[in-house]
Image (cartoon, one colour):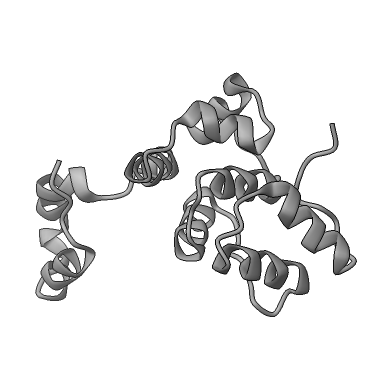
Length: 150
């Protein structure tokens, strides 16, 4: 499916009257975010573009395929931001991709003024996707690790 650029949709909205919204929704439904599935589709699109398999993401993130699948599809909703971060890091997401994924999941993006988040941001910006290395950075700075305790 050809993706319609956000700026094109914004341009259409800029010239629109409130009475035209239902037509806009109908015409562009395939391009609009579905709150329940937006995270799932985004997550899958990012890892597919990077030629990474979901089963590998689950393995690197330290979760079972069944649990990881339920979290990504939002069949089960987690409040554990570190879990979503681990899944994104295991999928080699960039900082921008991680922040978009967190927002789509309903969580706060990584925040440069938060010291622990800043450590994670530096790791991601240096393309460190090994959770053990990131844990070492976090522990070295006096923060809790990202990985779940086994």
